Amino acid sequence: MLDFARADAGRLSLSLSDRDPESLMLDTFERLQALAPDRLRLAASSKSQFPQIVVDDQRMQQCLAALVENALRYSSGVVQLGLSLSDSCVIFHV
Image (tube, rainbow, N blue to C red; front, side, top):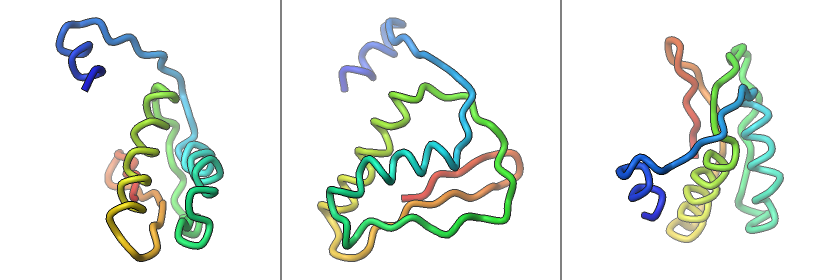
């Protein structure tokens, strides 16, 4: 909520850089796997060639961590992380 307030006030600073989305997802998986090693899974690598994305790495990691933690907390099954490509958009799946 604090970040939304900062964004609304024009005070949210981002540190944008080019990232490989597969590398970003793998980093997220490796960092969070200890939360539920028996439930958190990484989808098989896609045959698609993903373009580089421009992202604030820290903010993206925060978002993905929040989604994974909620999925683990509010479901009982496997939580799978994956990527897909739609037109020119990279889609992160939790």
